[in-house]
Image (cartoon, rainbow, N blue to C red; front, side, top):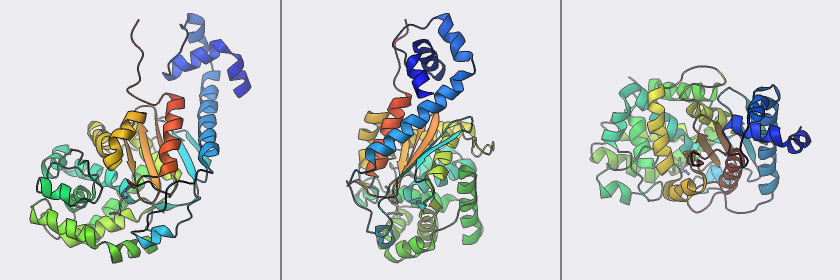
Length: 355
Ligand code: DON
């Protein structure tokens, strides 16, 4: 199919037109007719598969970065895990590399807890409590909390995320926790579970997050029980996921809040754009600007090695590879997602002028 694609200029132009990619040559009626014939879907599949396989091949041997070790259990995870998955809004799942191995979701969880708070209390609840602005600081910055007394930040840094968790309603810890875990499962399209070793390891070493939780409580951003909020936050970070799970979660956001695999509307359509905006400005912490400059994609990283990215209306993509750069973002995942998205025209800011 690849050979056929390369050998057929008209079909290539038609494919590019049909998929919204930029065509170099003018498109005529014959091209449009060709785009509408049954080969279009097959060509698109081949293109996606080729892009995923190329990214795995290109970065498999890249030896940059290191596993997170401030959570001792993360240092023991196999650094060679490298898997990629892409899911389209019509529910097609494409994978390459190791998509079976699971890692802890870590900070990617923050997106889905924020989504839950938005569902329960509206997007203004997040904005009014901890804000929706990038801090420009590391993810566990205390300086960022101090600067505006726990406001003017966002739900994707630790302080804002612990506050988000505290905003999930429930009569008991168990009820709140089950609600969060089940909600993540609705995004992933399957029941998820906790990596108990990672949870225990982080719970024993998360004194800094406990301090952040208490500080957010002192500034009134957490209403009560900051220790419980930090503990549930720690547990949510320990949920195990593989690259396929993460890509379906991302694709649910790419598809306006409706899980494209299960068909369930998981979050309100009108909340998705606001959540994506925060991912765009703060998803990769102090490197969010560099990332957006390179890809244009709302994204979120986790110190377990996962990154999700969303091309709205086009695809959700995820990569897992544990070695991280200095900002706490997976090295291979950033490169692989950027390559695949650029190959498939995923950057929502990339447009050609009207004729
Ligand atoms: O709270 C923490 O430090 C971790 N559970 C999560 C941090 C994280 O994933 C930052 N992401 N790149």
